[in-house]
Amino acid sequence: MLKPSVLTVSVFEAALSPATALTHVDETLVSKSAMVDAPEVVSCTVESGDAAEYVQFTVKYLPDGLDIGPFCPAAIDDVGGFWSWDGNNAGLSRIDGAFLKMLRRAGFPVL
Image (cartoon, rainbow, N blue to C red; front, side, top):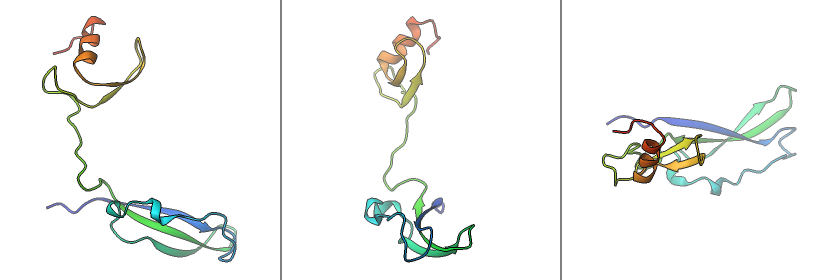
């Protein structure tokens, strides 16, 4: 089994000194199932030379149980992904039978 890819996201807690917080990170807003490890407070020195802290989140590249695709439906009655359409009636469109029929009427070859 492949090791899951991870992304580390850092959010500053204090930018002037450890006693002066400019922002507060609400760790409860990050789903625990999305994280590889518990959030970690890390000390650092910013460009000005002042001490600061930030919260480091290490999250999974893909959440557990996320089914992606199909992006293109196998049959005209199936539902696929989304397409950012910039033609007539521009906008985000679901790739489904109605969208594929609209493409055909617009002159695009659709299998």
